[in-house]
Length: 183
Image (cartoon, rainbow, N blue to C red):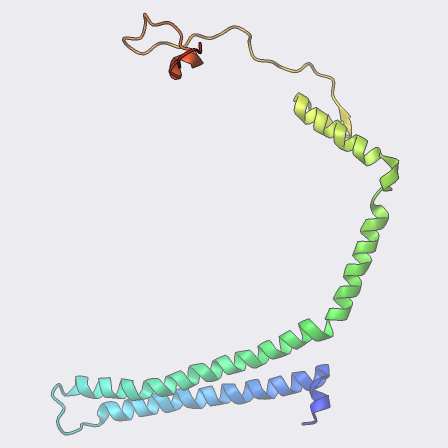
């Protein structure tokens, strides 16, 4: 294959499809070989086996597992060839169009944004903030006139713990020891 052909969409697709097919075919062969080798070795007795069928099965599994690993690696190689094509399309072929779309979207956002010098955006933002601070709902850029709600000014006496009835309310000064010359 010509190396320059590889850097086209059709050339990359052809190359990766060919590699994927080869790796999947190899994986199929490895799976068949693992099955044949495992079954053949499970039937073959070797002199000195102490546990009979169990020794044969374990030996067959130990040998066939390498072929199964080869099958897994071939499947991963097939998936990697598909990932190569997807990466080439995503990072090389489609990149200029995505960049053009992003630049057009950025230009549209700039056109839709109000001019900085008008100050209307700042006024709207401050009105909205004022509405939140005052506890008023903001609807379509205007603050609804509603009197703010305050807590009751009456002090609520919490019940005292048992044995503390005669002490009266405590102040901050009760928590800090007095020093010489200071109140």
